[in-house]
Length: 120
Image (cartoon, rainbow, N blue to C red):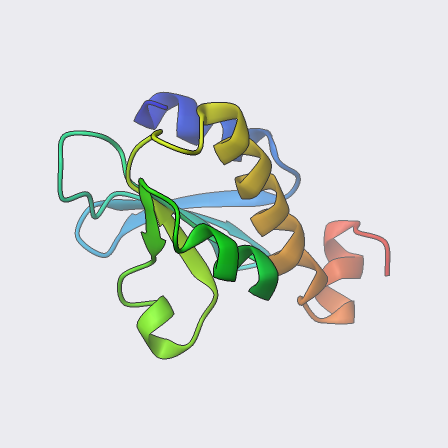
C-alpha cells in the first residue's frame, strides 16, 4: 500500500480528519481520536499502525511483517504496526484499518457519536 492509497482509503471512512504530526506521520482520526497512523518505518516500505481487539493483538503480534506498535503497545495499548505485506496483504490491511475506525468510533462519547451521525 502506498501513502496515497492509505490516505485515500482512510479519507473514505465516515467522519475522518487527517493531520501530519509526530515527525511526519500521517494520522487519521475520527471524532478527534486517532485510528490509523502511517509512517515511523524502519525500512523503505510504508509502516501502518492501527488499533485492534485484544484477541487480534495476541494473534497478529506473532506474525511476520507485523509487530506491536512502537510507543503505543509498550504503554499497554492494543495497536499493531504492519511493516510489510508478508502475512497481511493490502486488503487485509484495509479491513483492519476499517475495524480500527469502528473500535475508536464506538468509544467516543455519546454526544460526539450523535454529533457525527453515528448510531447512539
